[in-house]
Image (cartoon, rainbow, N blue to C red; front, side):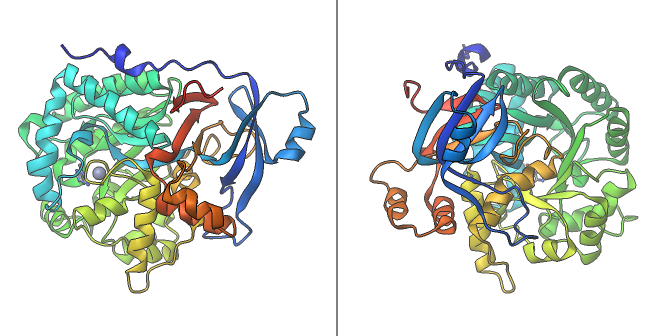
Length: 452
Ligand code: GUN
Ligand code: ZN
């Protein structure tokens, strides 16, 4: 029999004190480094003062210690505190198909993704995959994620329950499709409305959970289904929106055939009012200038998924074009089209692909950190809550430490400045460096439970 959700999901850590001062090197990006050229916010000997799960102060350790002389200090020197990573595009049911290489999007969907997603009809299987999914997120330092749920309402509820048990900040929704995928994954527009409304009632705004209306992509949604999405958005305050856009040439050509009235891919969503603040379109590898302009004007964000774009051969993200048009974007792992849960790896891949692109951007470590944290919070309309260490934010953080004798440890001995340290972290750090992860000050992952 499958292991129960409770057995696999509940992780007991000692309760954190109501007030705590963490001492470590600290990086965060409260300002957008694509717009401002201020110094990188780095405290070599830093202090992060947390009260009741919120950040009250962040700065040089000595100054913070002087301001709070009596508070308990947790000494984490030798490692780095960063805001918890924010993954703006990931698929819960695809954890077990990561690494299905050698195919392009539509072929990969048919042969790899969709057959696996059909298995989510089995609750005990969905429970196991949900537990693995949470583990994948926390072990890589991700504290917030915008997640494609399952096509089945029960499996989507299982995901929400697993997130709640684990304490992560998860925005998700049942994936809607009513054509062109395997029939096992279809639902009618009527049942999508019913199931979506029910899931919103049960999970939206519960603790750290939010709901996102999630048509899979225009290709697999009828106009009736897109209308249901519009209705759900209009009827429910604060729900987010996510889908795919302009990922692959063959996909785009098919969308044109299916929606002959639409001037381009984005116009299909626009007709139903699907976009705007808090909406995230994944990929957007092949946008027209007009689409970029309209995304920017509407405040819609894009999830840039560089590992997936390379693995599925979708193309190279026009990052400079997004910057020029002022379209907001952040990083996404796109598990399982992507190559894993690591947002540091996504940052490195974004850098590498831009390096190889004529006219590509030369991304800095600071920009990569912003794209993996604060930019995600902005995309999800959560920037008042998470994404950096400014006072009042939730204490969502990842503590990274280079394992002894690792290549990263060797580089850090010599790294001359903050930017070099950050670049080395993005280049060399993976899950093996993630020692502790907290959401709202609560430990959701720790590699050494007996640390104290
Ligand atoms: N477009 C529609 N569905 C998917 C998916 O599961 N992954 C990716 N990368 N693109 C999609
Ligand atoms: Zn995707």
